Amino acid sequence: MTSKHIQGGYVEHTGPRIEIDVSYQLAEYRQLLHEVIAMDMVARNEHLNRTSPWNWPIVQSVVLAVVVPPIFAWKMLRVGRCAFVFSAAGISRTSRGRTAFRTWHQVKHVQRLQAAYLIELIEGGAMPIPVREMDTEQHQQFERLLASVPVVILEPAH
Image 1 (cartoon, one colour):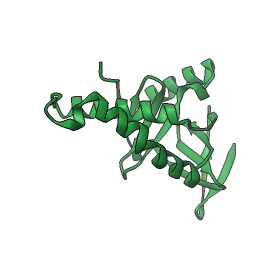
Image 2 (cartoon, rainbow, N blue to C red):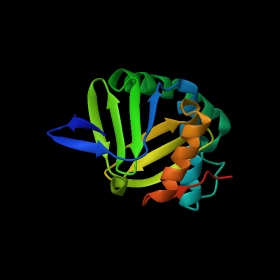
Image 3 (cartoon, helix red, strand yellow):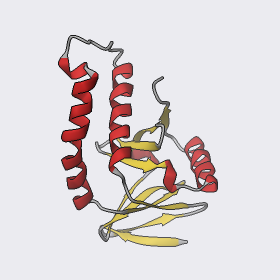
């Protein structure tokens, strides 16, 4: 068993563990935002109002091309590369020498997106987990883990 010192306490990842190293990419961040916006509209039962300029595809494309890159760059400067460990106990993320741990009870839900899982926390905030960072076995283990923990899994909007 491995323990990590986390803000004055120790956390044990017991049993099977999935460890992945994540380096985020701008293109997948844009795709993730696009999918989350679509899922949010479906969840709120909103219909696409084409009279609103925000809902024009050209406006959305410009926003994703102009506004998102500086936000992404700021996030990468702040967070950088992340090492994740997933187990029945919860999730730990190490970035810039700091480790944060959350139990599965602190997770609001997990969204399955086309190229990533988005783990949304009850306290706010989210952790995107790109599928490309998992090999086939890790992906299968992650799906089994999600099926065994108390978390709501949301499917992508079609």
